[in-house]
Amino acid sequence: MGKEMAGSKKENEQANLKISELILSARSLSYQIQRLRKERFLSEKVIDLTEYRKLRKTRQVKAVLVIDDDEEMKEPFSKALEKKGYQALFGGDLESLAKIIESHSFDLVLMNPGLNWLDGFEFCRLMKGNQFLRDLPIIFISREAPQKEIRKAFESGCDDYVSKPIKLERLVRTIKYFLENY
Image (cartoon, rainbow, N blue to C red; front, side, top):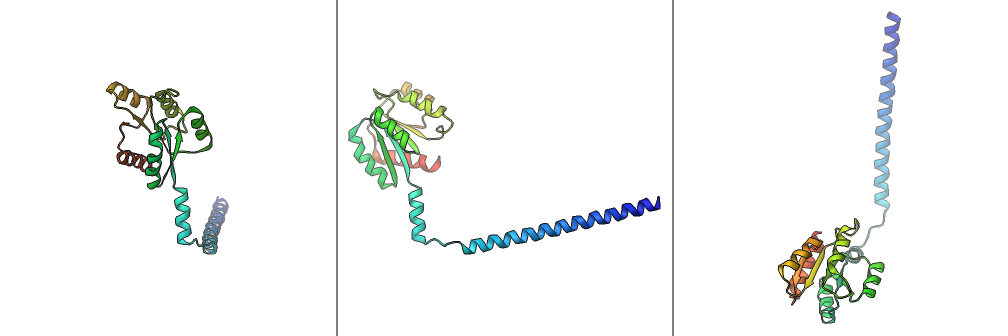
């Protein structure tokens, strides 16, 4: 029994030695990784502050998809959004809307739910039912509507409802709020 205890004691010492060697090699490896990271960081190109600001500005331009056939609204609304740093994409008919959806990404939808060529409530339900589009804020803009229509708009999934005549400053503030918080 004495030989067995001596043998198991020796095995334990060898196992402990292997574990301590493994710990030391892990520490060494960790140190080497840190050193390589520092070297790589120091060797990377430093970006000029103006260059960084330009890059940041181009990456942060948010687009608003406007679905409305009111041509009078197009120019002043475009200017107001551009002044705040946003891009306006106008879908005034089904064809132009399809082209925009196929070729652009957008961050918010502003739409008139009562268009002849598009059921805004159904469009909103479809967007909110899509796993990739459900988080996009949708704001309805429409004439002064009865409570029943406003309730229907929110039930279809819209995030806000703004009545016409539109106060442009208020609408732009609402858009800014949704773009910055959603």
